[in-house]
Length: 199
Image 1 (cartoon, rainbow, N blue to C red):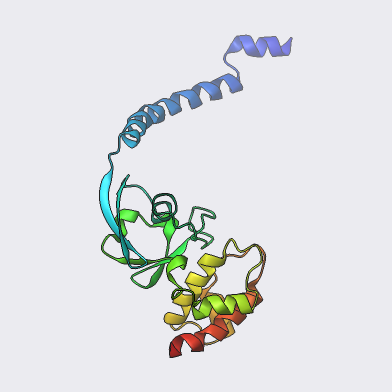
Image 2 (tube, one colour):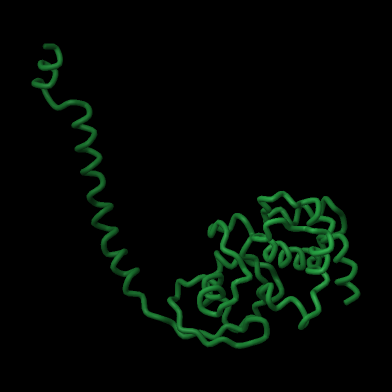
């Protein structure tokens, strides 16, 4: 009886909240519709990417990431798509010799700049010293993060951040290994660092 009197006296709290929420969502829905249409109507952009010393002429959506360009349009699948949010480091490549996250870098932004991927690190059949050190120290288990780990490790040494184990751990902290091969990774970087300086 009390419930009937409450419902007859006016709208319920649940009904009021539903109405307010629906009304608040209308302007958002209206503004999102044109954005969705614009996103679908994007035209392709001609670009030339210099990857591992070779030019690749591509026609891509201007929003294409470097990682997607490498994997889906150039066929270089060594760089891995992990989190796709710049948090795991699996997509690390070098642009102008500096490490970047391929999933957060637009392909259009690296035109005219040399890009190096894990496929371009070795010299023919001869492994790069960092690659050889990773193999020697078993610095991987599943191997999914390994290309990004190696690219980041090479940059870490070139940046001068491999003078101690603590420094290596700090400057490699952006690369995650779900298998927890971190001690082996540090050992590999420590061993490869002097070989890279003499190379």
